[in-house]
Image (cartoon, rainbow, N blue to C red; front, side, top):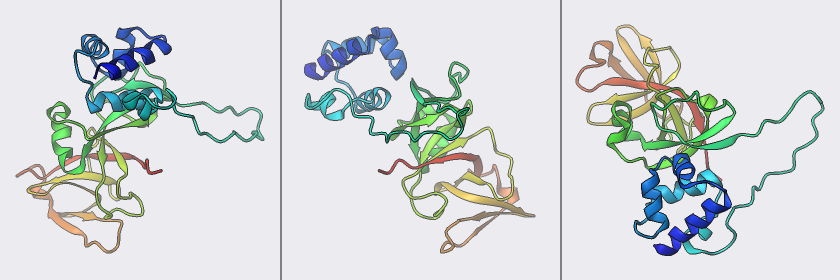
Length: 243
């Protein structure tokens, strides 16, 4: 534990960040980071993963002290642009962002690490994201977020080929009004959340999967917002991080 803390201290000094600056970028308190660096507190898996993703740190170096401190970028050499007036704008990871935090502090070309929840926990995440622990953290462009957005890890193939198993969808809980043909996250009693394309065919709500092997579901509109049946939000972005 003390050796990992020492490596975190070495990393922070290499990055020329104060404890307060380093902790702020990771969403942790200054006092907690201080205890970790001194070996008085064990770094959680969440902290280690955030360090690795935010600063492009080699997990083997951070956890075991093996290899180089930073990962290679692994990006192919950019091809010359035909239009000299165009410029490539790099996306920059600027730390951890939680639903409800101010987005105006970031540039639209920045990336932030956002929390990702299990699909069945989407309802609880929308009501109060602090009531459960994220299952993962992923980098997302600020331009794809709204003030209450959060990520959901998709399980199953019902929305393939549009949304594949294991993808992360960004949900905007501010958008609950049904728009025919758009993808929404619906909370269903005793089942949890499901991601489906939604249509209104009065007096019913039709939930359709993009995978034709799944049958559509019909729900009376009068049941919405009763007995736990509710619209959680609209899916506004899909990301796949498979390598």
